[in-house]
Length: 200
Ligand SMILES: CC(C)(COP(=O)(O)OP(=O)(O)OC[C@H]1O[C@@H](n2cnc3c(N)ncnc32)[C@H](O)[C@@H]1OP(=O)(O)O)[C@@H](O)C(=O)NCCC(=O)NCCS
Image (cartoon, rainbow, N blue to C red; front, side):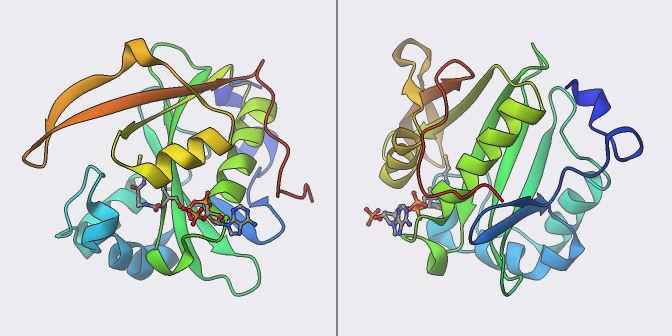
């Protein structure tokens, strides 16, 4: 399926993506307060592009800019909310970036509020997102990059079947430190790792 066919008027709503414990859908204003709260947590911001000073206005701007978007246009990002399927609580988010050079490659990121870490939630959500990107958005490759020191992220990517691309990493100055960024990729040929997700 081409990205431009994933619009509400031609293909119906692909969201929410469902897993056993979660629903996943584009973030809306109902998520704003919880989203801003965990973005202000210094531990959550540590390896991320934003600062703990992330404000309600910045959150509003981000959510407003993606209203009605089901998949990002090349070069753009889309923030997906991860909700508890039973309570509707916002647990964290997934970010999807359509890599500009090709419509069929995506980059992803993931964030969970601290109380929801260590429960396999990021893995369950990201695996469902990968399934969506490979089966419904015609993705050929999905990438992620992360600070080498971010052990939980590296463990998550490894568990999901991503492979390191050692020649593509880089060193940069980030938040006052010199850091190594590693690049990981999973392709449609790799097959998605079978694990905790129940297809519903
Ligand atoms: C990266 C991040 C999302 C990973 O979250 P996480 O909860 O550790 O990831 P997972 O969903 O894979 O959970 C794995 C843990 O849950 C445990 N777990 C419990 N139940 C589980 C289940 N049903 N299935 C799988 N794992 C389960 C695992 O044992 C593992 O715990 P361990 O780390 O103590 O070994 C989280 O650390 C985060 O939000 N960090 C801050 C933001 C950030 O840096 N994002 C990445 C930028 S590149």
